[in-house]
Image (cartoon, rainbow, N blue to C red; front, side):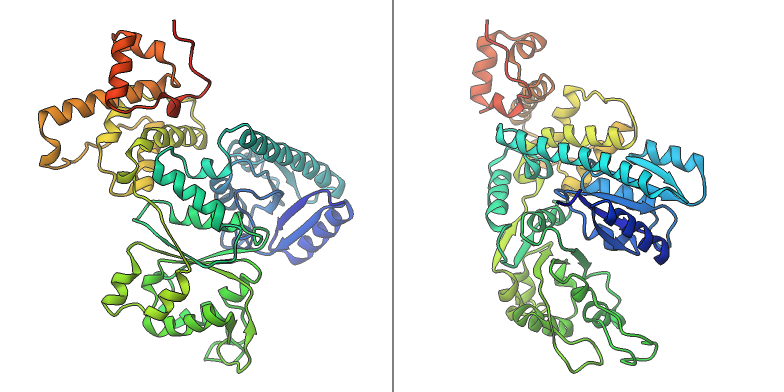
Length: 451
């Protein structure tokens, strides 16, 4: 029986091989790789192992890799390794969330013992998540896609249904709504969860090298191609490919992509042989691709191949009842990330954020939460238009938002809410009924009994 799964990252081949062999002898299942980006493609929110990484590597270093991993899941243990004996670096690494720190040259038994403790910690974290889900509390998907609005509940339901299938999925949503989070959730819910998740930014691919980047090439395929190279598609073998902002892909490459999606084969540049491609395709777009097809910028046949299933990620404007809960969670995460103590959120601020437009959606809301956690005042809100200026509308909206904000701050307990707002219990109930406020959405530990 395996002692657990370890992703090992070290750019020094000899060191990586010897470390992997030592951990393998201790019963661990080791995936070793030479660069941090490859490790990121193996690690998802529900990853059931740990990461051991060298700190000093070309490109993305170990500290940056740890930060990126903790953005995906803050409870994945990361053990950092250095050969420089830098005590200050060790202290900084521990403060930034490293599980532990070892110095080269290290005893293989020492690393194995640390890895075993980290693996036990990870096992307990995952078991607790399952128990919370079984008890009706937030599961992994609810932690990633926070909210109780009908649109977000429906999105989570569809993800749980579609995730375990092999269907290709088109994910549509405004900027900042969390399309990549949805894509990663689909990957982690699928049988391919243990294989790579390769995200390709179609808008950032260099035009001159796009085919080589995606399909790979053989030696001599073009000037400068001195050796064969795997493309991103083949690098994701067995896993999931995310084509981010696929509407930005050049027209001529769309034709070649159509064949890949349809037949699941690729032909590297300079090769006459097809290679079978075992992957699942996900794609994202900021706007409906039907509009791009009508404008002649996107191939209709490629759209029909990709949108076996289409998921729409709702903007914050369609789920305003989620904004306060989401902001509270983002502030807590920001405080932990910036090593700050718990940050209080005044009810007036919670009421104010609901009135804002948030054109940047969750990404913009996260930036606001970071500023609040750092003690920086939010930027003044822009006007929301003449329809929001009528006095009766504004008064009613303000009253509802204050009640909801106070409920959220009090964890859904009614007694401190009506006492704080200077209302009778009957008046509070009537206002909650009038504004259709469901107190259960804001409960975190059960309501106090009504006197």
